[in-house]
Image 1 (tube, rainbow, N blue to C red):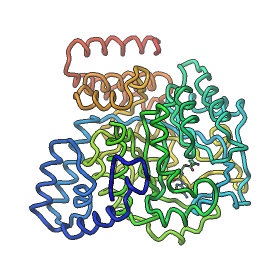
Image 2: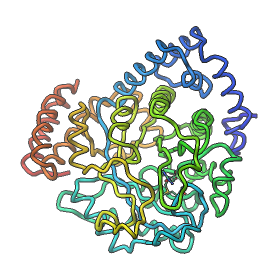
Image 3: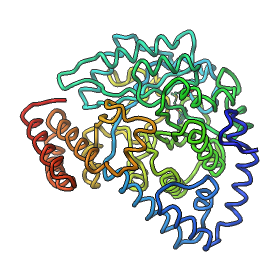
Image 4: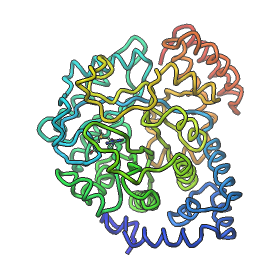
Length: 469
Ligand code: SAM
């Protein structure tokens, strides 16, 4: 029986409830009256249940689909404005004891050289990222209790925050490491991490067990209940994700929303972010083994429906996706993107020789951060390096309350513009700086509160004269 309050994975992701949801959605995909009602509820911007959202995902009425995309765009604008937060992944180690069949880090892969960064190498990678202009990182590591124990991860976080640069320091480290214990989540929280990210890969238990045949990750309940332990350990920003292409997307979509409902029911706060990765070609992986790939139209619809279903949850897209795909979904709900990424261990300092690849998957968007920043501005977005919320303790339900109170234009908007000004002054090419200055000038006028606007204008002047946060 589906029970969102239960702490058991098989009850909050009840398989029969997912199947019933899919049957309900399929039966109602052309039901204009029901879809109209669901859209009316969605316009209240309080989100939808997994069943309602699944009907929208299935909807095959062209006019209603246009309404779905228009509403997603509107909700994105209302809650997030035109800001897009930028981050970069930092791969610490590709040692891994798991057997994930889609991941080149799987233990049996003998082709890739195994590599684990020393603290000195981490500091050098961070300096290289800071030289590009990054302020926010997501650390990634394989699961290996001997090579990558929690102490290694904690020490690495300390190293990252400790690297000082002439233009400041890394302000937020998000962490994407394997499911762990409440004790270890407490330690991560004490180390001052931002979001704890863990992709579910697939919510379908039977497939999950086949796709993760060996290693600690094989345990579906341990993995699926990880966010509960993270919350119990005091981490209130957690990031969900499924790896699209492994299982049927409809199943994943409904189950992921059930997971969000569970976190809301059990802890009073839903996921901080949802990532939407699609499986990519990688070393030692046969791409033909995954026949659940989703096309770009379906992908765009998934993004739009997630945006409508959980309006306060940030959405992340990585450089797994091409410039074109990213462009398409940015307006539909994405609020964070990575840029200038390397998915190999040590890749920011040294490009890898062709015959010694350690990257996790092929990157589609290979542009530099400067190019990504310029491109975002050309599309009318404000690239943001802001981390103010976390520093002021606005996480978890406090962030949600802030978001719901509609204060984004008064706070996030000017903060984003200030961090963009810092970026333009410290890192941008001339080609990027010019349109950037014009954008800031126009956007600052949108701040509704006159006092805040005047203060922001003064801050912008100070930044131009060399003041830094
Ligand atoms: N080792 C950690 C774990 O097991 O959760 C997390 C780090 S792993 C480096 C980050 C994510 O990369 C995985 O959760 C998986 O979804 C994704 N990934 C693995 N292989 C991939 C592939 N071939 N294409 C795209 N993404 C992949």
